[in-house]
Length: 581
Image 1 (tube, rainbow, N blue to C red):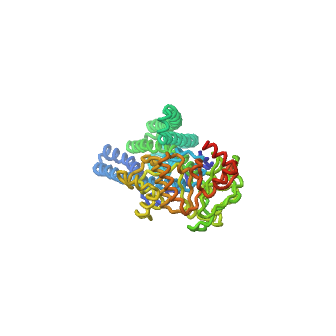
Image 2 (image 1 turned 30 degrees about the horizontal axis):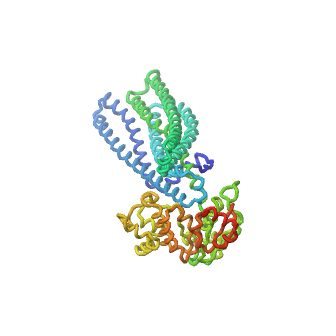
Image 3 (image 1 turned 90 degrees about the horizontal axis):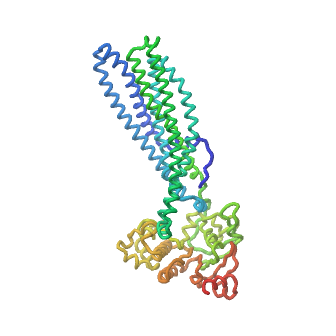
């Protein structure tokens, strides 16, 4: 999991409110609506005095006529103001959610590969879906309660003081007590909310693994194991939510009990002694109505704290992602389409501090148009070395050069636009075959070029036989296609990109003989005229390579062509003997 920096709740909430600032006009309309809504509560409570003293006690004909009209007017204003505040706050809230999700998703696209090596995909998905919703509630919906109910409370308090300042003093006593209770539970709410959000990430992670690994689970009978993992994550989430419920459930009745005690004292004082002699029936009912109407906003304001703390905890997790450093892209050069050569110069790499280096002082020069194959046992550093060319990882020391300049000198877009790749694990998106082949450049590719690439990759025939041809949906990660078909689609995609540098990572190792033959034909067409780096376990696929680089424990131990290396009877010879014995 990604660590979260320690920042104060005030700082985080201030940053959340910053997302509301661009929508000042809509927020002002919402606040005006809230003010109108707040006024109606105070106006209704104030109406009790003329309604009782004038209509019922004094039989004032003017009051009898005006009071019903004023009641209608109050609730018409309440409806309009309530709609305006609710609509515009929701509008702002969803804008904030959209912006936050967009920023997080954009950050996901620019984070270095090393981040994804350690992160949980379920947690990352939960942050962009569940946590962003919590943040928006804190930044927008909670403002409705904060502003509208605060204004309502102020108006009702003012009315109560106007009707009887003596009775109102009772309420001032419980104010500090409520404040102490709210402040004490704030930290608990935030800590629990962090745990809830973390547990949601665990639930998402288990679900994602179960969906993606459905076939493996069925074949190996892992249903019980997956169910136990899900039940564990699900129970953890339930327990944290119940803990939050307990804190919330205790917080509300304690505050309400304090308010009820104040009400009981007020009723007692108002019913006896000098206060009873000085206050009219209408004034007393106006006071009591205002106090009763005060219960609802006070209750919402006590629960507001939990919502804000949820948003702050969610905001901390989102801002922890947004504050991570993206891939370094400080280069200014544009890489030309003509490749003169590639050089690895004393390259060393380690993935984590404190871990051993996976590459140690590797030096290698690759000429333009040359096909160089990398072989060696698993963990020897083949893939790590090749991944440094498109800058998927940052070097510990040394440098990688293309056309005599460090890859750091080129813009990432320029560098990667000159590299195409075909790997054993082909990534296809849940889209049409045509869209997958033209991925990343679909707006500028014509149909003739796409078909030509597919013919060269020996993919056109099988695509044409599909019910919808090139418009056939391939399903999630190409599940509707066979392994050989997916590989040929990947080769067509690389052909269409027409990049001068090609990386082949075990492109045929998982295929049957017939599929391998067709894919190899496509690869031969793809490799023609390109500078190619091939990672291979099956030595039969790289016998025609110009040079073969044998790696062991992060170092180059042999270089030569197939015949030369066999003649030496050293590392490559031993690998060959193991495969063909």
